[in-house]
Length: 124
Image (tube, rainbow, N blue to C red):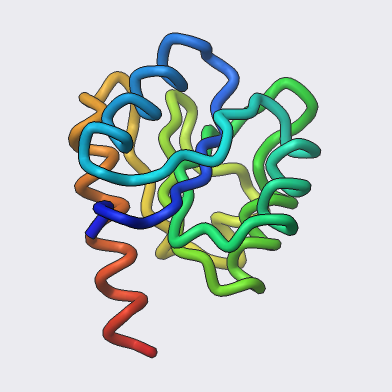
C-alpha cells in the first residue's frame, strides 16, 4: 500500500525519523518531512495531500492532539508511534486510534499504517 503513496512523518527523535523515512522510501513511498513539531506537521498536512501519516505523540512544541484532530478532519489515516501512549484528548474523542508503542521495529509501524490506509480505502 505504501508504494507510490506520500507519507507524512512527524517525529522529534532524529534517528527514529530517519529510520521511518528510509523504510517508507525503501517500500517505494514518498516522504513528506520528517518534521519535529506540531506546527510544522500542520503546515505540511495543509500543503500536501498525504495518503497517510506517522506521528509521535509528544513533540517538541506540544503533544500531537491538534495535528491528530486535523488529520482526522481531513480524512488522512495515520498511526501514532510513541513511548508514552495516546494523549488524553484524542484518547477520549477517538479511542480506536492506532498506537504502536516504542521501541517496536519501524516495520511494525509501517504495517500498522498500511492496515489503516487499507481500512480507509474500504470505507470510501
